[in-house]
Image (cartoon, rainbow over all chains, first blue to last red):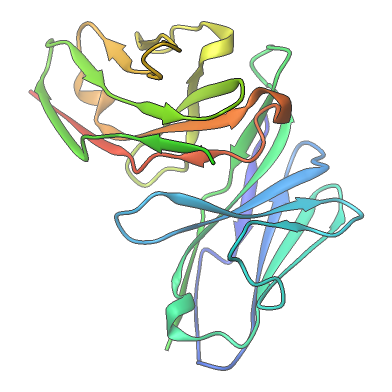
Length: 120
Length: 111
């Protein structure tokens, strides 16, 4: 259980266009999802926390008008990179927060497989 | 501010040897520490967290608040342990949210 999917797995877009990435929790509901960015050979950096039915909370330095997040349902959050530029090329990973599937009384984050964005 | 440091980007050991992946953290509040693992071509997954005091796949990690460390250890490494390991931190009050990741250690276990 607790599977998270992302679509697409990779996308190439032209500079100036927008691209949408979907993150879905397949077998559970997630009121909270997270979006991360990972540069080559570097760590994951939290971009924003996506809350179902309310506005996302962005980390310092992340432009909310550039990275639009919508969490319209308990199983879907979307990240739209608007007016993409080559420097936005990166690996974007989402996660969904849910109660531990291992039976512990804790929340865990379950990660999606990531989306490789290339802006040409 | 919260910070996680993994001093070794690459670590190589032989099968059957002990392995220790180092993790140090900086956090002003009560920390919750995690180890995540990413096997080749797979997604990131939770290996263990300090609160649950688990031993998963033979790995253990002890939170040392005095040294602000959360090193991951396994007495006898196996080839299938080869993977990227990330140490991560959140505040206890956020219950696993707002994770700060270290830069990761690529572990290679040689036959």
